Every structure is written in C-alpha cells, then in structure tokens.
Image (cartoon, rainbow, N blue to C red; front, side, top):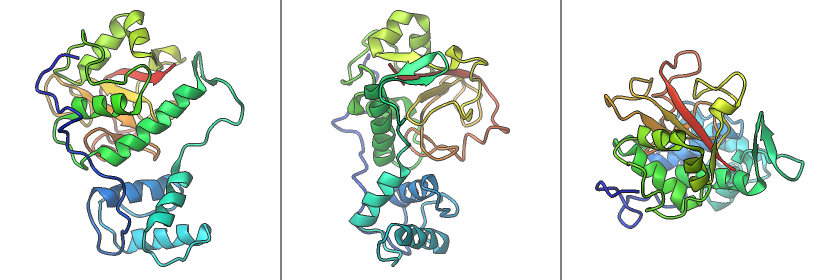
Length: 260
C-alpha cells in the first residue's frame, strides 16, 4: 500500500478496550459501543447517541437480570463479558464452509469477520474524521482479514480514496486472491446493490461510490465494516445514522468483500 501520509498503526489514535465501569451520566465512544451491543443483543437502549441516560440504564438492567447478574445498571467487567458474548453473530451449527449464494466462507474466514467487527468497534474514534480508508485498512490488517496482515500489504493499490480499494479489488481476480478475499455483491442473484441489504453479513467490507448517502467528498466514496446491529456501519466512527436505511439510501455500491 503506497504511503500517502497514512495514519499508521504506530501512531493512529486507538480507542482502548471497554472501560471497566460505565454508569448513569457516562458519555463518549464507549457508551456508543455499549448501546450498539445492547441493541445487537436485543435490548433497546434508545438512541445510539453516546450518552448513558435512563433508556440505556433500563436496557442494561434488563440485560443484567436476563444473565443472572446484579441488575444495578452499572456496566463492569462481568456485564461487558456477557454482553460481548450475547452480541456476537451466531456461528453456523454445521462445520465447514458457510454458504451465501454462490459464495462460501471458510471457518477461518468467519472468525476473521468476527474479529474485524470487534476490532472496529473497539478502535474507532466515534466520529468521522475523513480518514475512513486509513481506519478500515488498519482494522483489516490488524485483525488478519483474508491475507491482509501488514500495513504495507497490496503495495500496488492506490490509497488516496476509499473507492481505491474497490477499484483495485474489481480490476482482477488476481487482486482478490492476493488479498485473500472474494466479492459477494456480484456473486448473488439478484446482485446486492444496497449496503443495507440483509444478505450483507456482519464483518463484510462495503465500499460505496461518491455521491452515495453518507458520503461528502466529491470523488472519495466511502468504505465501512458492516457491524452487528441493523444499520451499523463502522469506519472512523459508527456510520449508521449517516447512511440512512434500506429505503432511504441512494447511490452506487462498488463492492462487498468477505474472506475466503
């Protein structure tokens, strides 16, 4: 990957793991993560606004009671542990490769998708800084997505804009093989044309073109990780509210990519 003043793993702002204690009045990216995981686990926390208010507290207490924990509304290590487990996407019961239409994903690939979501949830800064490509690239290389393990992998790929990832992947099957990925959107019938399509699995990498809902740059497009909750997309911050929903989203889907 060419150097264009990227945010490298050595100096990128990294969000540490979840705070050992969140309670009424807490705020910030960790509360957004808490709200996302509560929603993914089926406990409505209210708006995903990063503020630990009455709706979030009520959701925490209900979750704690459902898991045999003290329902005090305070999120400590035990609550985080139970919540992470509850928010994980279910693994297929059958061993071997999981099928999505004509695309199959190996057990190792499914594990990579789970790791990508968790890493992106734990290391975004909670708001869009316009560095989506650098953040998502770091999520992929840091979690071992496909064959991507180092910042300088895919040295021939341009890295100025988010859309460059899709442009490079779509140029040749050899580029997909180089990254250890496969393209999902064009392999299904009918093709996926909307990032909110329910066939886009958690842990997929989604690229949309310039002018699509949720983008602002004239030529860059956007690249995101599909999260666990409905409408959850992550790059340098959770992006669900900016990308609308399945009926309101407009634009061009450039590619959906998953491991082999």
